[in-house]
Image (cartoon, rainbow, N blue to C red; front, side):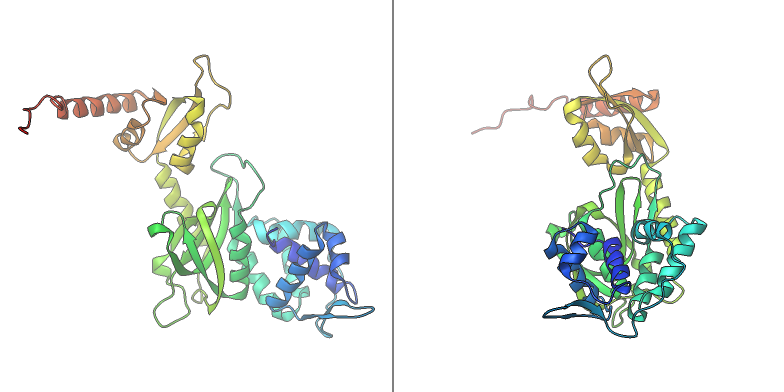
Length: 335
């Protein structure tokens, strides 16, 4: 079971409220298995939280003395809100901001900077269609752990050359609709600082593997996370384009088209229409580009509207027929 940032913070809060806690007690509180609880405690220790295990009767995990802090004023409602907000949301409601600030002040000093980084670099937004599921790709938790610790990661990505591994500094993680993204960059040569001129966006569900490295990685002072996220959203919006076509799709081909067009595809209806087809909206930046992208799906999808895209498809077909009109009828080659 992947380690989640919200669960780690809940474990930290429990540690701060008790003299010690065993893995079994933590498992019962978090409703996870004992091995999972033990891994969570070990992850806290690895991230810099000053906790240690003690064995024997009355043993368990304890915060090193002086690390315990006063949580007075942090309500249960604020804690519940924070557990979601810190790892999955960039929404800025007054209650949520107050909760984040209180927890950051309350957590032990070694963990405070990491908590601030995670809070500042994780965004969750609703546009680009309804969120289909609350599930977060497993890679996101590892990326957040790297961000909290200020480490680089080694990634293997579907789409990179043969899935080859490469190093990068994870700068931000966030979701737009149902899809999560990573913004990352290589370091500037002979430094540990991410190259702000080489930022790239990756879909979290296409990350094949992520490994947190011991090499340090950070962003330059004054790095504007809000601006970078907004620019990423704008770029993806442009990729989706202002030209949209309503397409009738054979039910068996719906998943294939959604996989192919990604955020450029949107369901208009879940149930087939009177002709047995499901309606989708496909977007692109130009009419001719949209026609070219849809041409290969003629056997499974028909553009219903607008007329401009239908005309572009017909013209594309006429050009193909003209070019290959004599294919197969040329002079026979001598043996």
